[in-house]
Amino acid sequence: MAVHELFAYLRAADAEAAIAFYAEAFGATEKFRLVEPGGRIGHAELQIGPAILMLSAEFPEHGIRASDPQAAGGFALHLHVDDADATIAAAVAAGATVVRAPRDHFYGERSGTVRDPFGYDWMIGHSIEEVEPAEMQRRYDALYGPGASR
Image 1 (cartoon, rainbow, N blue to C red):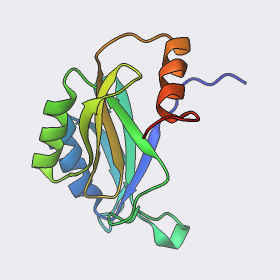
Image 2 (cartoon, rainbow, N blue to C red):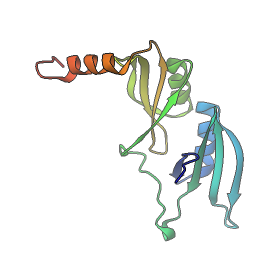
Image 3 (cartoon, rainbow, N blue to C red):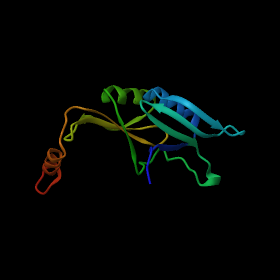
Image 4 (cartoon, helix red, strand yellow):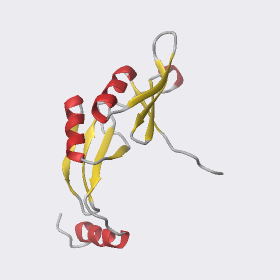
């Protein structure tokens, strides 16, 4: 088996609003959409940098449901950018809420997390230093290992 690509596929109660948000917050451009006669978006593809984000409206009659915007989800999307602070500020201006303010992290990234209006968490970061895995583990152990002060 050969894997060729992996896409995040999101569902939104208001797919039209989600497309507009991702365009404003992250500079997404819409490649195309498929719309059913009743107006629901059955599939849309957005270009965000080099990545494709797929999304649709919810279709409860098929068991396809949107995330709850008020609840933390079980996963997050990671957006690697040139300036995490500016991207987080743009997302907040577009309607996201800050879950975790941007700060420098032991693994060599400055990042923070926002929750978009559709219930999806976006970890947004940029590199501040190259850290080899062994050094990253050492730092992780120092932060979270036995005797570490948290």
